[in-house]
Image (cartoon, rainbow, N blue to C red; front, side, top):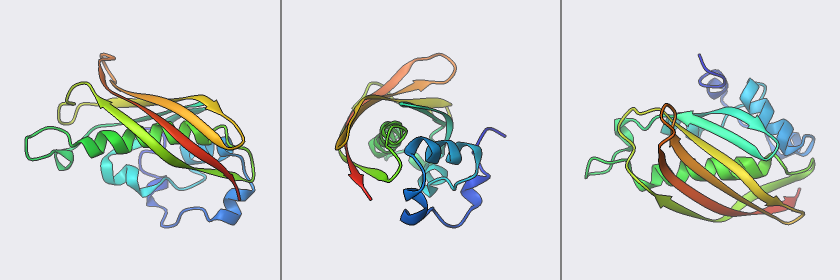
Length: 162
């Protein structure tokens, strides 16, 4: 089993704001990776999970299932958008200090090509800047085996004191 693929998703509750106030964003993301903190349920729903965490960088891995396909038989754009938002915003979270949180203000998605059903991918999110009030990040969805580029994204997040 890969890190955090299933064990943290079996927890029924997420951390509350009081608990989050006591740890940095990097500690929070590392806690999700190693199973000390629960994963967001959206990952289980959409078939991706956290596999790497470092300051300013996160990686999600997974594969779109048939349930993520649109009527034309390709992966729905919302799947790309949600995965890219997760990677970019979580990269920002790794640089948020103790006592602060973030939320996405806006994001942009560029779909390069369709991901084949059940193809293993990685979404790599990297920060460009995280300050007292804003965070900027980018991400790519690539084929886990070949490195082929499927999509890119960019985001601006707001960083807030709790």
